Length: 269
Image (cartoon, rainbow, N blue to C red; front, side, top):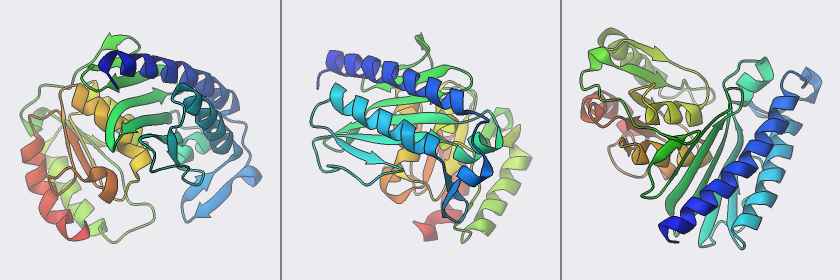
C-alpha cells in the first residue's frame, strides 16, 4: 500500500473509531457489577467491550476488504491474511468499569507482518492519536513528536504493574526503586495504549512493561516510531509484538533505561 493509500485508510478508520468512542462514552458509568464477566483473574470484560469490538470489526473490514482480524474479545479471524487489523476495543477496561477516566480504543493495521497504521483514541478526553508508515504522528490533526530530554533526571516514566503473572515482581520493584530515585517520577495509568500515545506526544519520556498482548501495543508502537522515538522489547530487539515486553522512549534515554531494565527481565523473555 502506498503512503497516500495508507493516509486514506487511516482517516477512514479514525472516523469509525470516533463513532465507536461515542458509544463507549455513552456507556460510561452504566455497567453494573452483575454485568461484568471475569475471563480470568483480574481480566474483566463487559458487553461494552464486546459490542465495541463488533462495531470495529465490521467497519474495518469494510475499509480494507479481505483483511484479517486479531482482536482481544473474539477469536482470531483470518490472522494470516496479507492485511490484518489488530484491535483492542477498550484498553483500560478496569479503569472504565471503576469510573477512572483513562481508557482507549487501540487499532493497528499490519501488512505482511509490518505495522503500517496505528490509532489510539482517548475516549474521555476526545484525543485521537494516529500515524501511518512514513507519514508522521498526529493528535487531533496536529503533528506530535517525542520529548527531547536526554537526562533521566528530567524524565517522567510510565509503566504497568503485573496483574496476573507475578513471576517478575521483584524485577519490577528493583526497576521502580531505581527510576524513583533517578527520574521526576513514575506513572501507572492502566492503559498501555495511552502510555505509548503519551510517549509519542512527549508527555512521558519512556514506558516499559512486561506481559502484554500485541493488541495492547501494536498501534502505540508505530505512534512512537513515527513521532521520532524508539521502540524495542526489553531485550533491545524488535520482537515486542510477539513476546509482550516493550520499552518505548524518546530515543535519547533508550540505552540508559535499557541498561537498567534488560538485566532484570532477560530471563523472562
